[in-house]
Length: 595
Image: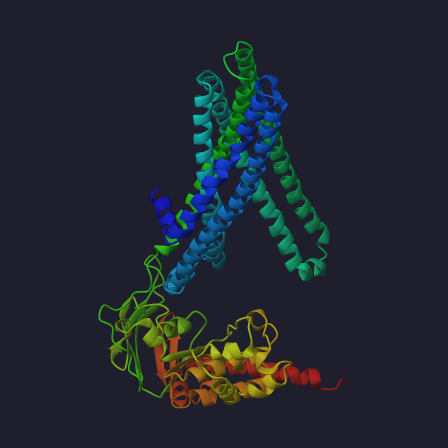
């Protein structure tokens, strides 16, 4: 119940809409009872000759018709207003929840996001909030309307005939009990059907996504068998659900029919004895019939509320996850210089996992270029990820200009830093918007100046809409070199004091590599730079080379000094250039004429 109350607080902000919707709901409920009263007076005042002259009975008929039509129109309009107001309140409450979730996503520590799959986060923001939105906009309406209808119907039956009420009122209760008995089996069958449907979709998605491999390996027949096996399981689940639904309908139909017939027979006997009018008997039957809807709805609503609470648990579990730690006494990061010192830094991604970095001590002065090299998995990317506090050190301290980064608000720290990753992420929007992402409030002139500095202006202007060209999802319409240059332009626009470069020229042609290297040179000028080097030929001009192995700094010095030291760097250098020479010899042999 605590979870439900917390979820309903999002509706509290929209109480005015709910109050107006409640007024419309009362009108809708009242208009629903016009028909039972219409039939009562139609029989008692119009159809029985002994209740007046033909002219009087015709007057009653005209009056009843006008009242019935008028209230029907009023009820229909009120139903539209009720649904619109509740839907509006529900949509706004759901939007508020999505806003809180979205904001929280970008306040979570990266370690927490790493533990969550992207699909899981999207499921919470979309599917779970959708379930709560259904609670806000339709389930609450149904609960309210059905409560009003059931209360009014029971009261009318008791007032009209306590004896018929005693016979008729238990019938909807038995009806609801029968529905509830079938409920668990139907829910299980429904869940199985959804699971089997998801499996069919997964097999289909995999087969379509891997169509090239399926054809290349001649496995279309096997994939077809796998697909049809999942389809047959889905058929079985759907048939079971249909059979259970039919049985449920038959049992509840018998209860409703027998209950209505019993009430009608007893009422008819009472009318024959003069204890009640025929109109009252018909009215009681009509009101009794109105109770079956709420009885059925309450059973379904119980399941809907349970599902909404389950969704709310997931939403609030996500919202309650701790945000990025903020300093108790924040200090703004220094606006200039930006020397960086790693002082005995140790790091692990989780308390249960081994350390990734061990006692790293390194000082990089302002404006210096430090190249990080080492085998795959040595900790290069982890080390630079500590700079913008994507992760916090677990031992030691990381300082910028002598200030511990944990004493600086994350937003202020990150304003000093720009990252050009090996695989730049581009948003599915325009070229201009992707570059402008580097700096809030950037003008068109700022964007174009950054693009020119990144050697990107020419290829951008050659595109169909220039800077307004859509780049596609993750930049699929651009080459690797073009994406890299846009990422460099984004970093140039940011004008950072500390720059992190994850070299990404190895998969490019020589011309693209030249343009990217030129742009990187402009970007690095006058800045403190950390370069993750995958190819040792690119680090020779670095002020210092930091060699990591298994999370430790094992060597540090210039290219010449490290080669003379004949340590890990010298071995990596020798292996890499031996491979380059072998590849060059192989290419020359292939190019040589035969014979």
